[in-house]
Amino acid sequence: MSDELKNKTIAFLTANEGVEQVELTEPWKAVEEAGGTPVLVSIETGDVQGFDHLDRADVFEATVATSGADVGDYDALVLPGGVANPDALRMDDAALRFITSFFDAGKPVAAICHAPWTLVEAGLVEGRRLTSWPSLRTDIENAGGEWVDEQVVECAQGPNTLITSRNPDDLPAFDARIVSVFATGEGA
Image (cartoon, rainbow, N blue to C red; front, top):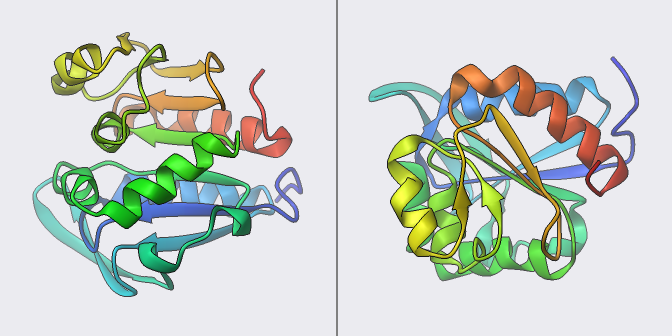
């Protein structure tokens, strides 16, 4: 265990159902192993149903609801994917405000797989370079973002550093990058 993220609190934002479990648990583990404190934020407090693709997996407990979440309590934000997860978050105004507040505060945000859908909905990809699950390419480009097919993309061309990855296969690179960026609060 290192102390790169000592005294850092990292928000993990998910819907109450549909999060791709490994995209929650692996970055969470990376944050903990680096000495950080992860906090699960969801639309409602209580159960968050994880999924292994389309199959139900484990249940996690969200301790903070989006309606009461405050960017001032966190140093960075992680947006795990899953198809249903970001789709539900896009429909929650409090979730969109919470995500936007990280950009407004200049704090780093990391999104993997389908998670950039919420960034598109919040109007946060224009002029940004990012990656995602390939099916989001058109949505990202239509929203003014530059989509690339790379394992992990770090974009500091905006009010904050945005880290994105394509899918669970990219988790080792994604996890290493979020720890590195979150440790300093800014990009390389």
